[in-house]
Amino acid sequence: MRGSRPVTDTWAPPPAWPRPPAAVPAARLSEPPNGARVTVAGLVLVRQRPGTAKGVIFVTLEDETGTVNVVVWAKVYERFRRAVIAGRLLRVTGRIQREGPVLHVVADEIEDISAMLDRLLEPDFRPPLCKAGDQPA
Image (tube, rainbow, N blue to C red; front, side):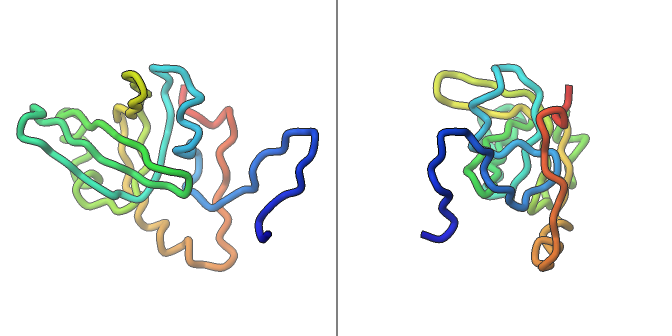
């Protein structure tokens, strides 16, 4: 089967995949503790601003491993308005918030990295990958 690895007795990290630098994949967000500061990145699937949410915006990002729910409070939205409104690919730094099985990243910083989308099509593009020590403190 293409892409499969032989089973061994020792653990090996998954193969590298293209993703924005210094971002935790969605599939690994269950690992950091509640309140941990992380950086995530992904394509914007949905932006929601419910009238009953008192100015809160909910953004759903998708990377190659799954989706991430991002909460953007009004003050953060004002600082990063352009990125929130127009960004197709975002990098978000914030704190993990868990309530039962539901996990959100509460945004502190939002960066529009949509320009990376064109670079992903280049055959030799290899972004720097995230290492454990790369995450914000």
